[in-house]
Length: 255
Ligand SMILES: Nc1ncnc2c1ncn2[C@@H]1O[C@H](COP(=O)(O)OP(=O)(O)OP(=O)(O)O)[C@@H](O)[C@H]1O
Ligand SMILES: [Mg+2]
Image: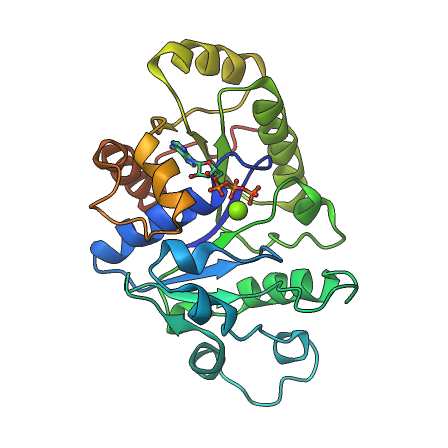
């Protein structure tokens, strides 16, 4: 499966990407997690230390679009993906290494092209942890045009749900067939608010992950997000993994 994890800023895309990557790996699947944040942090949540994250090579645009010679997907993986203690391979696609280095268009093209490759020869699941917002879908060609499924992460807020609604409209235009609505940081007191907001904006709410103080503490210390952290969140992560793997199950575009 090729998954794009998308949503408004700060809703928990990187957290959900790391948790889902771990859960799929625990089920015996080979998982590639791609960090598209120009300030990448996904590797930290998967158990790399800061030095290792800084040393992650960035996939150059020339490798995956245009003349990439005869590099196979396996060779791209070998050169640019790093194994993490979580068992997930991680790749950095949009890093900005110099101030004033310019835009990240090349990185977006890289992700689009990478998703278009037959990645399944090397990995079973590819999880793209996207930058905030919807620019990656509206960009010409759509960075995530080749994704099988979008994971729409939402906090219980109208703005987060409206972002998901806009994302769905763009996904339809791009021909992406499936999306899964994930509520995150959902306190019991806000659950019905989120249910109502999703209903108002025609956004599915397939899974709700609770707000968990242990996740915040782990994030502050840049600790890996494993089963020892935030025991209360894993049941929801398991349900999300079930939905991801069940191609028939959820939110197939009704239109
Ligand atoms: N279920 C949760 N409960 C409590 N805190 C959470 C939860 N999920 C994420 N957070 C916290 O919210 C903050 C933002 O999370 P994260 O970095 O995953 O968001 P993001 O959507 O990737 O952000 P950005 O848009 O900057 O990439 C972090 O401090 C994280 O620990
Ligand atoms: Mg993030």
